[in-house]
Image 1 (spheres, rainbow, N blue to C red):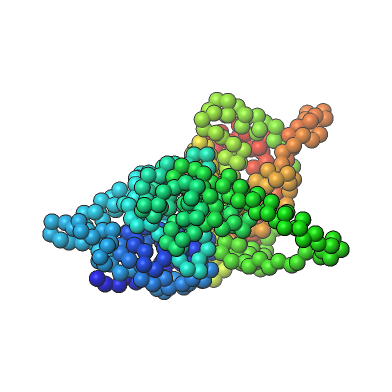
Image 2: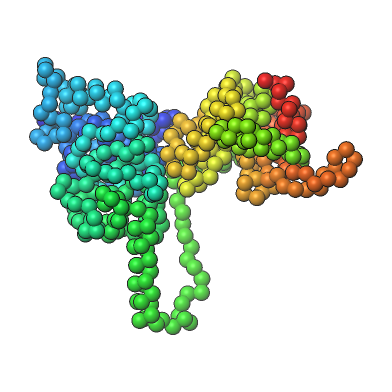
Length: 492
């Protein structure tokens, strides 16, 4: 038996630190290769960190909420210990993998793929519905908050779990149950004991519990397999509220004694919020930006969108996908706006690929996913990529690679009922275009007043990379495409 120390890896793009959100294992737990052991948050994303070793957890080198440096010890695992989930089934020659796991078993898992999506870890895409090797369930480490969950799974479609450590369809990790413990109404009492696992699949349920201050160990599950759902959390909130009302009625405080004003709150700028704040400050400090805008008659543009929806409903072409296609055509015509500024060299770097960033709202705030290679995609491919990244943003599962490398940003803030704005450029990009709502307004058509779908588009650009003529040419090109979508055929 020997101790293996797993160092906190660089989770992408040269990050130097990560915050431990929660531990998924505790000292003394048995772990298998590629089993998630902790949820960590970097400046770009929140991810589950898989373990490269199989054995017994000896030391957790940090507490929940602690910021740890990349390259420092993260967890120590004793491999080859009695009771390991991988011992006792060695190969013919007795060889084992570096983690202590038999070579054939290790290679089988490696070929099949674990479904963990972390830079430098995990394997193929095609096997995310494969069942993970069963292991001893884990428990939350002392001092940690609630264990984090895997990708979001709607409450209405919860899978039935029949063994500890299984993986549900879609790659969602289901926390296993202690052997010999039955699921049901008694789980709330059982789960409060040390070493037992809280069975929650949906991250939305955990978020809901955190917002209402509900300890999931006290929640009685009603779903098959003892899985805690949203309705269970809300039932606990309602019970607590009823108890609070009874207590307040008994106390009958004097209304005059109540405070007349609320207390200040301090919200730390950490993780993604901290990165956004730093990047926006850098953009304002370094980029001499300018903004130009124009009103457009988008009646024909919206008509084309409707025609495409009727002709190809399965493609689900939306306004954002059509706008993205127009941006790609515009950047091909005016490549100066698809660039970055190398201040050290005093050069403008015109990017060869068009990696289209777009603003998306998520439970963790505004994020900017990137459609890599958007310049080579068809309209249908763009639509699919945008939907996929938007779904990941809402589920909070975007990887660092999916939020970096953009060359131009599209911000469709019309969905929020906004007509226009002067956005801050997403550093280190050189430009961002914003599209406001498209609503009925009076518009002159062929000398006659008519009601048309009118919206405002605005372009904020780095004045170092181009002058007003180029910026005006780009936004006018975009406006012409919105007013006469058929002009896009000229650039196909």
